[in-house]
Length: 439
Ligand code: NAD
Image (cartoon, rainbow, N blue to C red; front, side, top):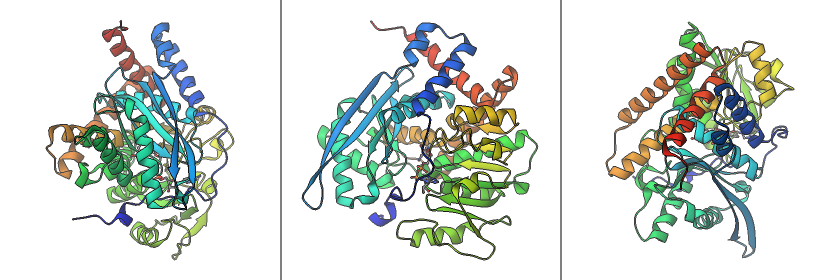
């Protein structure tokens, strides 16, 4: 069945008021974490120096003919942090705040994420500084195709494989696959993941990141002898990751007491009716929570959501939402990072001191890249699996990775973030050492 284009439109919400400005640079955060890990691991200084810089950074100027006939030029980036463990892998973000340093930080995070869940990829990331809420579908397609063409020299199924991230979606991945195939003169669906099913996508990919977040939440609660049906959850960001995580945790028995998006949040201590909320979002012209009303539901700001009464807090919007200035007001006992880099280094130290347990992004939101890997494998073999099989493999990957990080962190007496990062950096370093430095 053909999927109507409107069903695959991204939730372009960036024209709306943003959260407080990011004070810390994501690349600084990534380097700071790497330095701390290197010290703990007594990492070889040469390997440390290699990992302190991305392997390759490409910045492109993307001219787009707009519908009114005028030309606008957008800046895009693709950064490959490390290809030591395999082809580089990472999403593409469309957002006005995209900078080279943000993309570099996210690329490094992808290197650690792929290593921590044991999939044979390195790390990359892409981004275009733009506000897609301003674009028509045709403008968006032209921007995507031109950006793809301009970064094509460094892409490829064995080089670098993009995927969706903030404000990009299966339709955009389909345009990337088509552009690459046209330029190559041959079908090349395996150059990008997160595609629609009829362009070589995988069943289960859409919900994969949220499902992974839910699996990690369940494992974390189990280790603390907590029952899912006695657990309350608040989710910041009701997009691809947040919506699926909320739905799957609800199905597992948790009570979802608060959700939010860029327009603000909703809260009901007795539990939100997610099906009703989803109907509202689907009917909203910008696919927002704004304007939703129901008995017992109160509006709250994104700041209030972070500080609301819930056992588990899932930040699933953008980076640096939990900072030095609000970390001591977070009331949740557990934080499961659906977003990339939602917690600053300073906030992390405050949370650790307060005994808040954080399941770090490179573990908690790795479900997306895990199923991207499964999609790539299916594309390469041109043989596709049922959703139950994809979910079975995803669950096995996430549970195994969680166990590895948990056991390692317990043995070392370190936080899950430090434990996950130490495991990841160690795996990448071992591979670099085994491969040697060419020539
Ligand atoms: P998305 O664009 O689908 O959703 C983002 C959500 O966050 C939207 O509901 C948006 O309204 C909300 N939001 C945006 N700005 C906000 C703000 N200032 N305050 C509160 N809410 C705000 O994006 P996504 O794909 O769900 O990605 C969310 C996060 O998860 C990002 O950090 C992304 O890097 C990370 N992530 C995504 C994937 C994936 O597979 N999509 C995988 C791993 C990690």
